[in-house]
Image (spheres, rainbow, N blue to C red):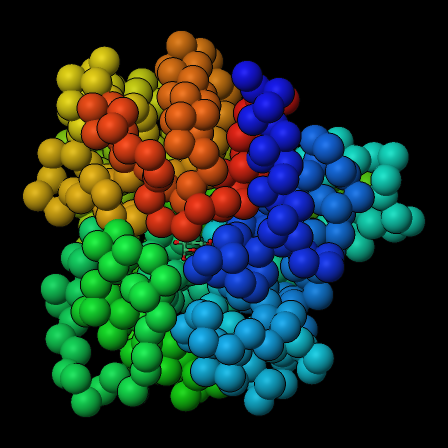
Amino acid sequence: MNRDLQQQAQKVLLDNWRDGYTIPTAQLYPFQWNWDSGFIAIGYLHFDPAKAIQEFASLFSGQWSNGFLPHILFHKEIKDRYFPNADFWGSQAIAEAPKQLKTSGITQPPVHGFVLEKILNLAADYLPKDFARTYYQKVYLHHRYFYENRDPHQEGLVYINHPWESGRDNSPIWNEVYKKWSLAPEEVPPYQRVDNKLANPEERPTQDDYDRYVYLVDLAKKVAYKDQDIYAQTPFAVQDTLFNAILIRSNESLIRIGKALGENVEELEIWQAKAIQTFKEKMWDEDLGIFTPYDLINQQAISMREIGGLLPLFANIPNQTQAQQLVGTLDSPAFQVAAPDESYQCPTFDATHPSFEGHKYWRGPIWVNTNWMLHQGLEQYNFLEKALKIKSDTLEILSRLGFYEYFDANKAILKDQKVGYGGNAFSWSASLFLDLTND
Ligand code: GLC
């Protein structure tokens, strides 16, 4: 069975391949996305390593001279298929941005360190000369950008300035920030979204979410994406769990790569030690048994159970006691939408919370990339049975419905469905399936 599905998964990637890079899904996201590309490169490593290398290199063609790596690269003009489109961001007016390529002005979780390590390990025979050193330096520069510009109190934790930067656009955790931020209609520039016409609007973010997304983009653009100016004015600056965990996981890989190359990794090790220590202390919520994000503007933790709070396992952050507690939380009703044998894992948000919505984007459904990270994290901590459950649930869901964007965690609901949620032929669902089945 896996063999057929592997072929279908490869086809999804090849159909989404566009001359050097891969789009997430033609239906909704017709450009190159940052963390998508990282996960996609991992899939290519299993059948076409040269494409993995090209994917990665093409993503870094969008890197700004200050190290910043944007969340979308608009390699081609495509009108009316995505909002905010290339011109809305105005990257060409920014001195640090590439001249030949339009990009967005916000970033996404920095997966590149661990993706680069996987490329170096699995595509060793295909690497262009100096690839390892060149890309080690580019990723390093990206991390330096974060520590120098997104860590105002020098804590070792970086903040995101837009919910889109988290990769979990409409998670209920951001609503906690919105509650303290009143937005008048006249503050939002005129815009026309298209996502809710291309996909089922019931499965997409609300109008209020979009108004805030657009307001924040507009604010950043008005100050030419200067972080200090954004920070001085923004209602949204959050030290996110998943974003920082991924940065830490990538630091870990960069340190190993740097050492193997004979580079000086001292600065990386300093960042890393501080990051892990602050993360363990500041982000841990003993009552909830999970890590939680911190809202820098309102100076308070966002006390909710959500997938990002479990994923520090992927970055080897929790101590043994915390790791045990995380597994307890994973086994609790917060991450089981029905009785244990009626629940697929792992939903992305607390199923016992009133904001949980089982069919809506990042408010409850299962996503393949978060399951892929959770699976690896549980393995690293030797919770092998749990890891296996996450893996077999993921494979079962994908083989039943195909490579959709996200899925219902309720077995009874999923059983009667013919399709998953969101976009179809979604690249990272396919590429991480390939990784899980070649593991
Ligand atoms: C959505 C997801 C984000 C992803 C993008 C492209 O915005 O929330 O994580 O990168 O789509 O697939």
